[in-house]
Length: 219
Ligand code: CA
Image (tube, rainbow, N blue to C red):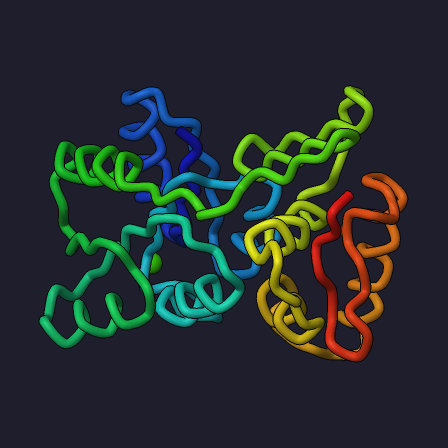
């Protein structure tokens, strides 16, 4: 299972990484929110372990930002304070579980394993026509039986189209979910991504719903 550990303290990060590796987890480390956001689409983690006390953007704000962007990865928060108010804030921010420092390594490993088992799959994950198969869960697309290489960002957009099949997805929804803002720069990147997706998967995959956004085509 792929696990992303976000913790600024190198010693703790390595301790956690080593412990999880003993369970066969593939661990990627990040020292702060910026580093985590930079790697998250490439790593595509199945569980996130997040320290609350990070320099810069706090763990709590990062957790909220990830949920806002549509990342539903199960998330375990590590914190130095175990107060009820802190637990409540974490759960409200979208965390799935909580462990107060100092924690027993065996408990951390068990909680990560449990979160891995709880992973929820998105509802609609496969789009299929005579020409095209797009499997979001497997991150695999084939067109006329040839595999189509797609980037992590392209997948993030495609995932939303496939999940919303039959319903119009607005540009605002995609921008908020994938870029976290609706700036001109983000909007321009969306245009580029849509053009690339159409080139790779065919014009019929995503149709423009006039004035509203996009809708997944019938192939
Ligand atoms: Ca810390």
